[in-house]
Length: 358
Image (cartoon, rainbow, N blue to C red; front, top):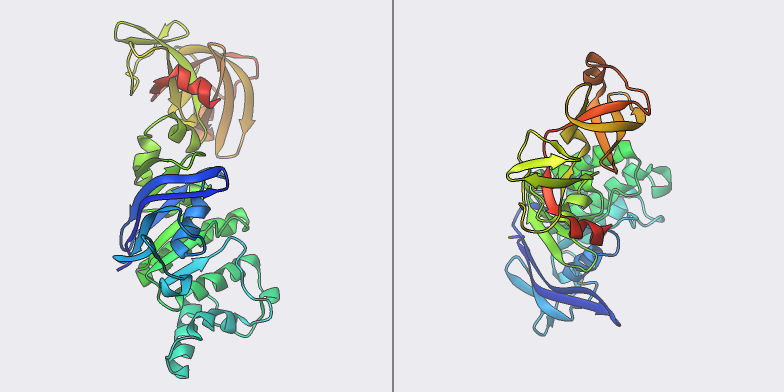
């Protein structure tokens, strides 16, 4: 079984403590993504799971077997893993078929069995007719498929993916993230994926673990949970574009810039210090009449959507609405035009935390 258990893991490089007392579990057969900014330690953790680095403290189990820690450190080839790197790491002097077959060279399977396994996985990644080509004859997306085929051919318990889509263009990234999910369903492998790309993480994952720059795990949950119910301000700000307004309260009535709003903000209430309300661009709209008074600072027509920058109470907010909705309403406003802003959802956070994170 491909369950990965990380227990109290620590890793430092000289005086730099990258990970400290980190624990998480990746369940058998799930796609678990470690998401965080560059430098937060997510690739370090993946390399520790792979056996490319040695733990300072803690333990790692794969499939119920201790592979690192407590006096044990199995080499990568003994961990039944497949690894796909950011730069593909396909050998330029080997054909697609030979690259894919490499993990099988140390196995005792008969040659016809190895050939069938290689052809089968190449067919699954859409390279069945390209087995005799060399990497220089392939596109970036095709090279990435070679790396995936090589990782899958030996039927690993766990597939480790280190930013494998970051070198691809936007269209290929979108295509490949769905192909990875399909391949996982077909093979049943557990996936531990590391990335800083929120869109990929939200689209691909069964669960997401969010790391901060101190290497701390801020939240673990399904894509819907971490996006819709962020554990704190840092998670909220990391997952997509956010804007903030200053909130005051008259009893239970919330006000923005002295104007009452017609919804109850979610989160801390008065008595915890100054509060701000956070929202994402699609959680507010411009209105011609009513709402909180604002001033249009910028209008950007993006095709299917219109992106507004609006000043409210001394803060500049970003609001995005569907173009058809805007045109069916009062039309595109001019920059410098007064407007109203209606909020559909606000999450409250301590204003002091916003200052610290700025």
